[in-house]
Image (tube, rainbow, N blue to C red):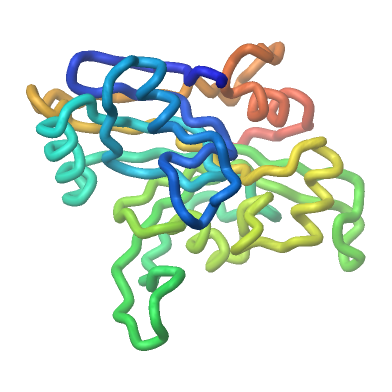
Length: 249
């Protein structure tokens, strides 16, 4: 079994790089899946680990786990009370706005029709754009995409994915909220079928000292040669092998 890349660790918590396609823990929804962060990390560290937040199966990047129950309680409360700061990177369809805030309430995906909506707020900023001289849609002669920074200030399930769909700029590879033909077009050209959403940076208060800890995935937009051994190699290839044009900060 592959080991996980550890970004930071002390006796209270550990930050790891979660690969795309891995589940955080076992669930009946993916009975055939064999790759779980919790079980792999437990075996790797030789001790029990406690989940305190989650990333979707398709999302890669920074994931924090507690190493004892008191730390798990403190970290879970930090996430629940928005005492954390999250920063994501997504590749989306089309030229997204330079900067936009989405304040669009959401219901849980599986909620009944009469369920109450929940406040949901995300800030987006376009970091780079791409135009390919190939048609992915018969209506257009070329194909456009954007790299978008997403900073959610609430923690609703699939919030970033659903807010980008709300903007009509769904994430490439999003089978639930995106466009199937476009996802397949990109998968053929990139040689990879995946959700292009990356948990780039996470700031949490230390569960014992309260000190602000900032964990970074290591992904850089100005990547040079692709380092295949790095956990961010998929993203490095995407950035290095396509003619991205960066936009002003």
